[in-house]
Image 1: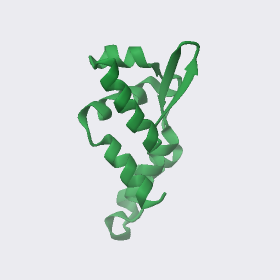
Image 2: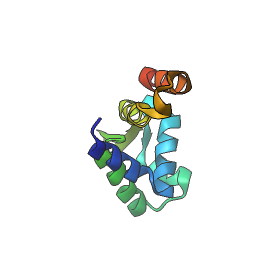
Image 3: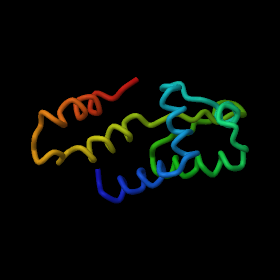
Image 4: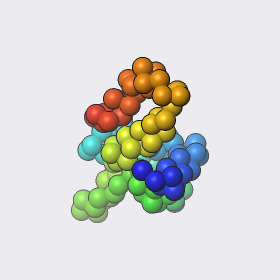
Length: 111
């Protein structure tokens, strides 16, 4: 992962509503959720949610797919795994025993 992409993703997550949206989508798994369900679950106005989803989508952390009249949003698990690996690659002054469990979990991607 390039530093610029990591910064974009970290920036996208560095806001309370966007982080809540992302965490909700992670919990929803690969099936994702319609935008209306996300707005209702988080008590976020639709126009605010739209802006938040746009930022998350541009960073690559979230994808949206049209199904009929709805857009189903889901977390991009490969992207978040890549970000975690990027953050942990050079950690702990090369002491793999400290970082290995986290890196292994990130590489195997949850859900």
